[in-house]
Image 1 (spheres, helix red, strand yellow):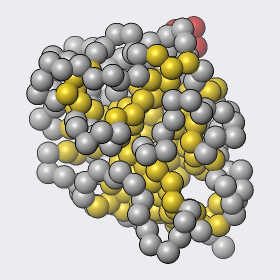
Image 2: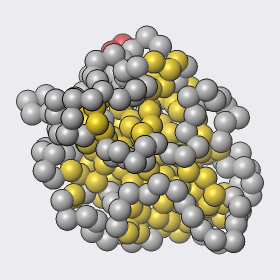
Image 3: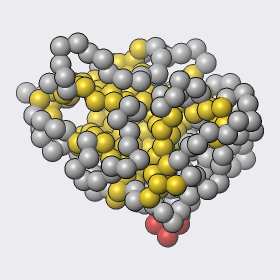
Length: 250
């Protein structure tokens, strides 16, 4: 019997585009919660995001490595601070917002943070969007600070045997002309096995590269991990990426 089923993809919103290596089904918009009737086992990476709980037993945890290996052996981000290099504002204003992030405590990236509000944020002074109701992820440097970078991971700990239905939306939101970066590779992994992945590279905020909202199902067991990962396509600079994700286990 097949362990998982991934459905084919469709095109998302008109101003966004994506190149998928292996894609799963799509619908319009950005997912905020997974509201499926008849089951209590619904989980949202956005609404359940925590700045106080990040451990091996947390339902959602925030992790990284500096090798790019998809081995399910990721280090927990250990500190929560304001991101050192960039301030965030409400979109279209100079009003700063209290953005903060999980990080290593010694480097500005990798980071994972959340905008739980109904207001889109931006990097102050730019049009780079941090969408409402989404996480922001940015990979960090590789081994010994290598520009090739490593993985940043949002990990879901499966609480019971069953079937998991997932919905997610990645968007690469940070174009940086002349930086040498070529965007990110996103993936959905079940433990150390990659189920779906793709390349996103935004060159202009007029055409944000995104997966759109996609979905799929897989058989899971208690203690499995569903990992949402972002890694640089070439260099880790300028690779802020938003993620919205929901999971139902039944």
